[in-house]
Image (cartoon, rainbow, N blue to C red; front, side, top):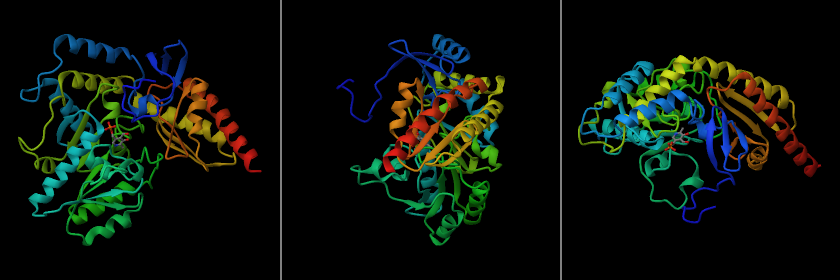
Length: 396
Ligand SMILES: Cc1ncc(COP(=O)(O)O)c(C=O)c1O
């Protein structure tokens, strides 16, 4: 499309000029049903009046001052997020990877305070934590790491959804933390056993390890709870949040319990933009809107409705391995790679994503109505059926 951009993305041949609710409009005037929300970011859809108003009002007063000064909106947002999560301290940044960097740095400092020279963090197979060097190392995908060595030391990997494999590190005195997604997003919407987080909490308690949850994709209402750990009834030591928190305005946050957060002192970590008035005013409006419009409840019920429709339409089809979801975080897993479905859906005015090669990922906005969920299902089901039939014909 434009050869002055670095070639980090294979972009689809469309660009959008405006949006409204769950709909996006392309430069040629075509309208698309957005079942991806900018990869779990625009939970309130596009051009939500409450968000536009918050951005407009804040931008007419003050955009940025830096963290050298007090920032009222940052303090309010920290109060709100610590209230919701039961954490005690917040560090604001600009992205998910940065929120995880902060978590990793907290774990490292805690380790050094305990006299551990080479502190280790357990991460999972199938994980995704970001693209900075440390978060890339924590990420499982070998392809994403290729050509970027030397990577960062101090990460140990265990299979996902396997608490015993984590407990097996108990005899390693270097371990200080477990970093895990409550539901793996990029790894294919992997939903672990109901008591997985509870078991990890127990193992971390026994070993004096920090339990650090990456809720960057699973958080801010997507699962029908504020955070997946609220739904699981588990209180971690650290939670990282980004994506949906700003509805498109870049903001991330690392939330922590007081004793873990105390590892960071003035000068040990920082950011120029993080937590500026604009981002924090927007995030406050996002939280207010989720509350005012009952969107946690909507994500849970509309998500279940969409899941039921997909199971009804595709559950018995040959070539489907699983249809799963929690809230508006949904997946249809196929037996074979199905990346071409993204373009097919685009041709049919529907935005979806395929991750882990063979998993159709749906992340519709939290504002999605039952009628819109039915529209998504009605658009997607025949595309998947045609794809399966075509593949079936080719192999018989
Ligand atoms: C679970 C998880 N962690 C971290 C990240 C990285 O976030 P960002 O792209 O904002 O750096 C992502 C992004 O997809 C994610 O899904």
